[in-house]
Length: 400
Ligand code: PLP
Image (cartoon, rainbow, N blue to C red; front, side, top):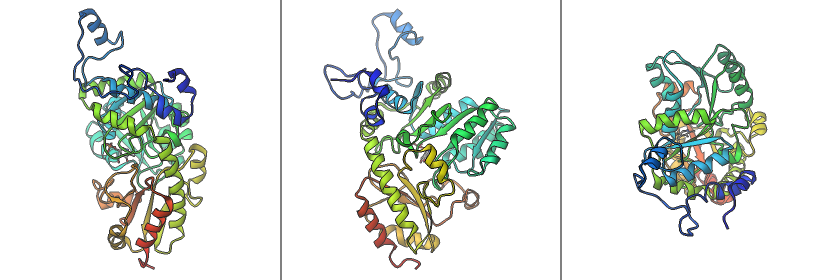
């Protein structure tokens, strides 16, 4: 029996990941959401068609705007994030760029942090300045400096926490309060944390973004992005997306939906494994530094503990021998894909200088505090002890 959607809203995150949004499009007794590939949707009655087109009654017109399978995905994430509204995109970057280009106009000011994901950082450094948007890039862990920049006035405060790839943590509630004092819209990229570990809207954000390609989908087989939050803002960004065209494909929406049914189980396992692995690496003589908000040695561990339920499945570490040690170490690992992705069921590792921050120059990476010998390690759902044994054999004899 399908559960009523009203009940689902009150349920725990695991129940929501499975049931939210599911009922509306189940056809002829099917228990799984169908993949609707149709590009357009036909109407016998021209007046009904017109009303659907005007948004006065539910329905679909054309796949660049809405689609039944895609709509279920949007609804599931909306419920998980506790948002008023949600709209989806072909990729996480499409969600981020559409949001920023909707909210910002020439002459506006945006405050953000130096440690956003490499692609996001490019938007701040390269594209927004071309449209005469003033960008204030702040040190991610210097909350006083961020507050000072916000108090000068801004239209948008854009944050990410924990950050990619150095796992810095931003005090979301404190900075959201500061932004609201100057009337700014607060946007948070919640990709690393997932709604299982962190709910930015409850902490004061207006909008939450995910690269659904990562933990939401969890199987590294579909690209996607999503924006959730205040209805008035989400509708504005939806309008930008329906015209600019970065719509999520129904097949990708189906794969993401299927992946999300196990979101809470995957993330729980990844939280536990990542913490154990971070502790193990911190004690290893070949390791120079470990970046993980769950470690008590993390400079913002206290804030992470306050605003997160778990610390997530991604950690980074640097080796004492720098890039040379990384070159020798990575191919020795057995249970990893050496690839540019994260958040999947398989463990994935790679150096940010060739993955998330390949677009940046060495100086830009240095300015962001990303060591050239850093390795980002996205923990999969393999047995924790197997992953530790794997790391152990690969680290043996390196730089000690
Ligand atoms: N946000 C974060 C934190 C990411 O790590 C990524 C990609 O790695 C993105 C956004 C961009 O997502 P996508 O690759 O789906 O465009």
